[in-house]
Amino acid sequence: MRIFVAGASGVLGRAFVRRAVADGHEVVGMTRSARGAAAIIGLAAAAVRADAFDREAVMRVVGAARPDAVVHLLTDLASGDSASNARIRTEGTRNLIDAAKAAGVDRVIAESISWVYPPGTKPASEAEALDSFATEPRLTTIRGVTALEDSVREMPEGVVLRFGQLYGPGTWYAPDGLRADAARAGTLPATQTVTSFVHVEDAAEATLRALRWPARTWNIVDDEPAAATEWVPVFACAVGGPRPVVEAGGDIGRPVSNARARAEGWEMLYPSWRDGFSAR
Ligand SMILES: NC(=O)c1ccc[n+]([C@@H]2O[C@H](COP(=O)([O-])OP(=O)(O)OC[C@H]3O[C@@H](n4cnc5c(N)ncnc54)[C@H](OP(=O)(O)O)[C@@H]3O)[C@@H](O)[C@H]2O)c1
Image 1 (spheres, rainbow, N blue to C red):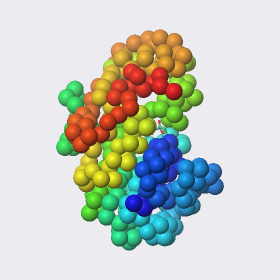
Image 2: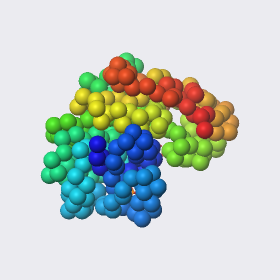
Image 3: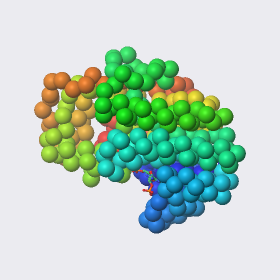
């Protein structure tokens, strides 16, 4: 298959491209920078330069790639600002979907997130509506995710992957990442908030398998959603931080169910963050 990957130079993008090339696919990866292009070429894929907000450029590079499928792994987290990430989900996705349509592509696989469900204790399935009653700044994120997912569903074969919090090499949870710094500084709060994680390699494997999965929405999270009271001490220990103080309060969060992807045969290297946090 010829696969066009937007966001190929990112943490998840690189892990996916490596797997796709190893699986025999031809990959064309999109990036804005020479550095990103070098990373993509280093994975035995072709690189093209375009900004997701430059509609003409996106139409041009997707058309020239003549792909069988488009994989959308664009995120904008550089500033840590939910508004810029929402913008790339809305405008960047719009451009990419229109380019895919113009290129006659049916299948688009897109990265979404799993922390979009209303708070609660029952594991959320993909059938549940998103948390549209959220307040800001979460509401901006929910609206961005809604725009992304609605655009993807315009495609004949639109696949939405709602990933848990990515951890592993290159992420915020790597030993040199933001969260590890916070854990070592003792500023990562061990609250009641429930999070679902997924290791970046398991997320990449799900993305590869999704090339052949039915066109629908999939929660891609590990088997063990957990309150921060449980995972922060394990994470702090893995990155050399002190035992955290348990704090009362925190949002309730929401456990997320991976039953649909598990039933489709998705297997993980790290079914739980308990083993994954300390994997090197
Ligand atoms: N995925 C999430 O929603 C999420 C949520 C919370 C935390 N995180 C953390 O974020 C980190 C990175 O995860 P990630 O792989 O999703 O993101 P990433 O490594 O930052 O990759 C982002 C990708 O999007 C591309 N991109 C961004 N803006 C673009 C634009 N305007 N035009 C074209 N390409 C653009 C980048 O390409 P170039 O820069 O090469 O152009 C890059 O390939 C991890 O540390 C993870 O822990 C992720």
